Length: 164
Image (cartoon, rainbow, N blue to C red):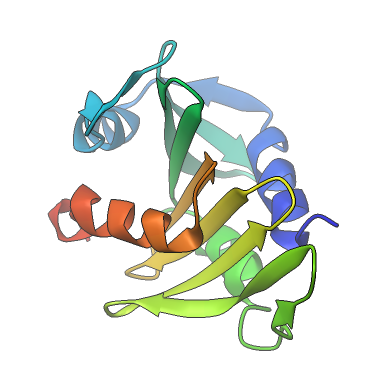
């Protein structure tokens, strides 16, 4: 069972019709670390600005890896397209928490930030979506670890350094 947010993330990511490199996308790239603790950058990072519904949004993604652990981080800047942010987060408060043999999912907070977390107990894969300042949507995914690990990653990323 996949969380609804995976589908939303995919739709937001692939719905663009045009993409370019911009200073906004570069700023997101500069905000993300080159390595993360013991994890090293795996592959080339992506930083670009896309058009969706006639409005721009910027995004950046990086993947870090060590042995069997892979951490993926993507951030979307919806400053010029707040409707995308609203659509991405509007059901978080209405969603029912789930905790069964396969999945634990529900809303959570990290400091002052509202988030949605999910943990696939069978595959030990965690995902975390974080609303930063009502402008940025931060998406984190890790295998062989828990949402608690991802919450610590968010704190280490220092979201307060983002322009908002």
